[in-house]
Length: 238
Ligand SMILES: *Cc1c(COP(=O)(O)O)cnc(C)c1O
Image (tube, rainbow, N blue to C red; front, top):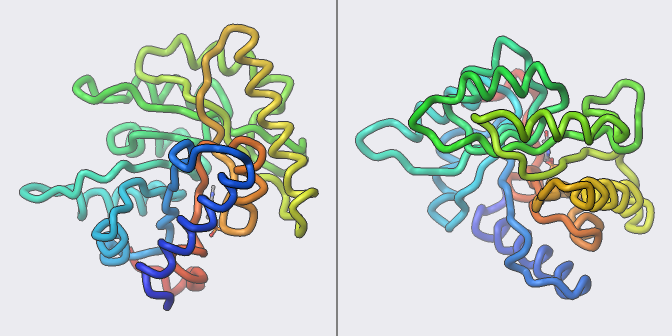
């Protein structure tokens, strides 16, 4: 396993280098540590190094780790992000724990999250997942339907619309990686020009975070480069 301090400083250095190349302030890009399949101990280790935002893509895993790490009397106070496919029967668990959901792609799920957000919590911060390359099997709202979904989300009291998210098909050079990210940014700019005010572009992972930052990512979601390769499913532990 990669030592967590070395992995975290390597990823931070990559983000800073990409920001320098793009002429951007390094503080304009947040690092979300994607801790799916990782144990609570690994999250604690990264938190001890200063990382505070963690992403999970499977609701039962979010519940396990949240309930372990945020239990009284010494909750860690991490910022939990949900970045996975969201089924209707899992929205409550997420609405009660997450600060952010990056994967809203239909109104029915948005309504459930809003209705189920507990009264005492701030509104859930939401990104719309966009199927930016319009791949047939892929999750995400079609780019042409994003404006209507954004308007619906904006009208829900339990949610606050923050931006757009995408997971483009893998590509192995930076110019190719940049194309879908550029389209996501253009879509965000178009929607903002139509009266929305989205400040977040959730795009870029271990293999393409430089391309995403060059195209304006404000949050990169990084798993493998921080924690090492994921174990096979049968070896997962929470
Ligand atoms: C797993 C995952 C990531 C992180 O991917 P890596 O390649 O391990 O950095 C980012 N976003 C989502 C939605 C994921 O499911």
